[in-house]
Image (tube, rainbow, N blue to C red):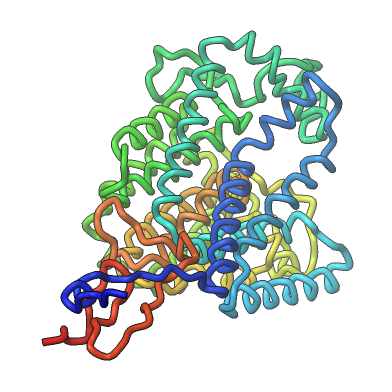
Length: 457
């Protein structure tokens, strides 16, 4: 047999593709993690619209169905958040232990309070585990496209929309509204879907406040502000300006004054986020709480109009009526607190729980200093929203918010090239092993890597 010329043996690489037995399961789990994240985020966005469709066209819906859907979505988030890091388990154990203590002192179990905090815990840690900016960008873009398309359908074809999605009937069926509150009406938009006074944003659009897939306009405005913040932060995001425009369009269609003012403030604050230290952020909500309570005690206000100043007075009135045990979280109250996020959080979790939850958010660690910009935007959003509503606990908007915040915290932004984020795990689960060599031959390595051994002279 003719021997092989050694000149060819030194120049012909012989890559041998082998399967890494550990990479395949890891890659499969990373793919499953992304699928769970997509289901959880988009499901949180759209499941109320789906249930409304079922209630209108198929079968009656009850509050228990809503709870089951929320539990399933939160379960998906926690499955995707599982990992070797201890932070998820530690935070969850501390929170559950504290809430069990409060329930024992109160003599009553509040499942809604548990759900309110399990949502941010599950979705935030899901974002830290997935840590894929490309997926986060895609979910933001898809979400706002769904919201805007659904909203335009509602605005231009309202009667057809109500034939398919009887919003008022859905909220009555699940027990969120009564016939007295709807003045006997069983078909129509949500009770805040028509503004009695002229619109604030583009008055020529009329009194209709578009609710989109959220079925009520407050969440639509909040969601627009969240999407706008992410696009403002992600300077190299694909279709960035289209996403920002869609977010602002959603805010305007919903006539969401809060969302509009929040977008302006987050933009104006861009040069100053790095100047605001964490202790200031930690103190702000409690300083605000103290000032509002002092105002309520000094003026004896009983509430106000349906605007920011009026909600400020509503919060002041609620705070002045709370007993010390309620403030400490060891007693319950029948006071309606949904129009004040500050009062709601205080009565659900007590002063100690409020301080702990807010402080954990402010001091949450992040991998790259760039994340502080988006982190600060989220703090502004929550601080402003606490004055007028408790809607920041709703999974409809909170799912995407906490997922992208977790993503921002765990991504190495400095190490990312524009538009090409690094995935969390190997996409193929395969590796290249060096080929067997004989003395005098060049050892081959994985394609794309440099040869570390000298060539045969």
